[in-house]
Amino acid sequence: MTTPAPDADSTPNPRIAILILTLNQAESTLRTLESLDSEMGPGVKVLLWDNGSTDGTAKRVRARFPEVLVHDSADNLGVAGGRNAAARLAIERLRPTHLLFLDNDMVVTPGFVESLLEPFRTDPRLAQTQAKLRFIAEPDLLNDGGGFRVTFWLGKTEPVGFREVDRGQRDEVRPCLPCGGATLVRTDVFEELKGFDEVFNPFGPEDLDFSLRVREAGYRALYVPSAMAYHAVTTTFEGGRYTELYARHKARNWLILMRRHAPVHQRMAFYMLGLPWLVGRMLVREGPRRGLSALRGWIRGATRG
Image (cartoon, rainbow, N blue to C red; front, side, top):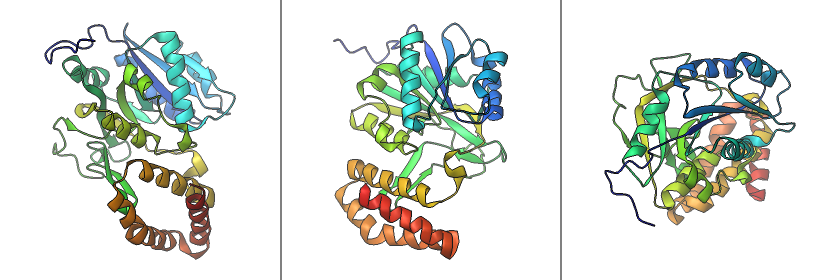
């Protein structure tokens, strides 16, 4: 196969499927869809995957946005499972060249989709682009100004520029490790890498794992600040509480991620330094009773990871 020249248009007829996963968050989902009105066109379609809601989300979306393809799953497939199922359905029904994974608690600004798409037109090795995110509740503050920043030895991931006042300091297009909340992915690369790994169900870091696999496969990813959205940062798993179950999944998934992608010296440093720091921080933050419960979950997750 002949590789396109660097100045060739790599996506002459792009078709984008915007994939939104939801679970019992009807109001935020409707708000996200309303913000996407100006982004719709012949080459841009929306697919909503309802991951087992009981609040009537699917019915309300169909009534208000009949142009949206809605699939209401009888079961909660988890984040990776739901996103993969949505992608498979979109590929079958819509034949997209690109998949835009968008959290259901976003409000996008005009030109969002086109800004994410534009870099693909001239870079055949580009696999992903990511938007700039601010907080809905604190609109001057950055939620994400450049993708993941990963410190394996501390067991820590944080968005670049997290909670900085946005004064334009993160307005340069740059390479990044995209998060899954607002990322546009080439469909062929998504299929080549077999999508998100469902070993991380019910929640993360399936998006970080995918972005690292994209990089390891030799593709590029870019942060595109002209694509901007406001993020409410909501959660459904355990209501966002650091319960024993939450801690168990978090520990298990982190260790899987680290074994796959962390250099040996960072893995060793995690067990010697990062893990004791994490345990101490968890006990202080959660208090004696809840902290010990979360610690039990962490140990169980680590031993079964």
